[in-house]
Image 1 (cartoon, one colour):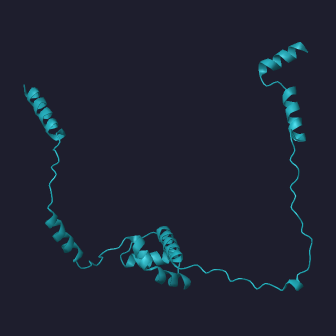
Image 2 (cartoon, rainbow, N blue to C red):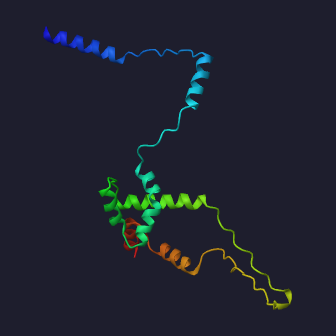
Image 3 (cartoon, rainbow, N blue to C red):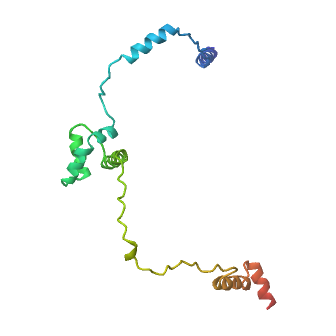
Length: 169
């Protein structure tokens, strides 16, 4: 009898966990929306307490670049960062630096190439213009393809065909 009691309680708990509650939508009055909107827009800017590794490397990009110009390797910089509580691998540091450099380089306007000074028309010597002519396209098989095709016809592909040709000869 103890078993039947256990089974019935297991079934009842399974049913209670699978039942879903209906979502109740509530209406928000227009006046509440207006006051909440004003409250949210009047909030002061909240300072950021922690940074992701990628953001930290982006913030330290100039300092890291200076250290690398002084001869320090990625591993050396990783050790310095680890002593300050920033745990990062050398490969991640390298990847994040390249991402940060790309982001800053695209933000700067690109320099347009300066127009070259043109020479007066008198100084140009008339040179014949050579045209690039592509070789004529060949149709059909090349010589090596013909040899391969002839060889393929001469030798049978299956062992049964070989046996037939050997028995006939």
